[in-house]
Length: 382
Image (cartoon, rainbow, N blue to C red; front, top):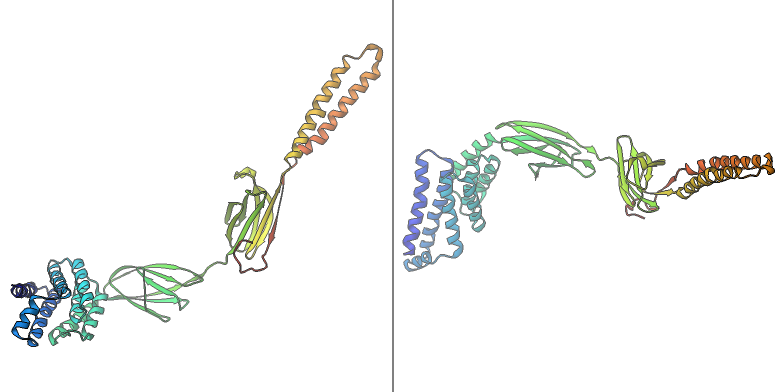
């Protein structure tokens, strides 16, 4: 029973691609026929080496691996005939993983060709010609050579001239194996993304649109990455907001923080709150390498409060009391007492304003210290 079923499946596998071939679809049906012919080739060889009873036993009880292989091949043939090439490709790959041979490579190559994936089609078909496992016969080899020639006519090429020469080139996210000053990379027709990258340089991205058989030259000169100085910022007291500003750049962070800056001159400002009006300039720092920036904010709030108190007490309250006392002076005391009280009131008022106003308007003091660590290569905070 199993022998009859196997023979029926083999017959169906052969008849299906032959029927499609008769309709003029040459590329994929040929791949399908190869899988079917492989099925027909394998079993007679086994029969020659065994008795009739042994042949029946071998075919009626195939290994799980063989059964899976032939199932995948026939399923791939059916999907190819239905022009579901993605599914056929996946099935042929699974079959090739179980039993790799020239036949499965040929099937893969023809499905790639049907998908307009000409680069992979050429690769698989050339490998099929070179593979000695279940090799192709003369007719299949000639058919593979003709298909390779057709696929090569469609393959486009992009020649990349990278600088530096050792740069890595990626096409559509896949690293190219091409080496040397000129990278000759075969690609399928259409739009492609190329990324050129190298340590110490800024990566470059290019897009190319290629027609079948077109060759495009692309020169890519990478720019060196800008020098970066790591600056570790601390503050006294902790939690101050620091602004480092230069031409075209304005970085704000809350200490402690780590900044990556391009070498240059930076205006250093700090504040106790992240508000524009609160920042005060502490000075200018020349940043050239990895360093530590320590900023200090010396608050004069207490001094300002004393100034306001002096203005209030000496400038207002005490003079008011003295002027009020003038009304209570007896006439017998004379003008001398009145003049004395008035003079004292005016004098204290003047002192309160003269001393209190400057004290109440004094600003907080900001300064900084930029220090280069003893080990400049150590990027860790000191």
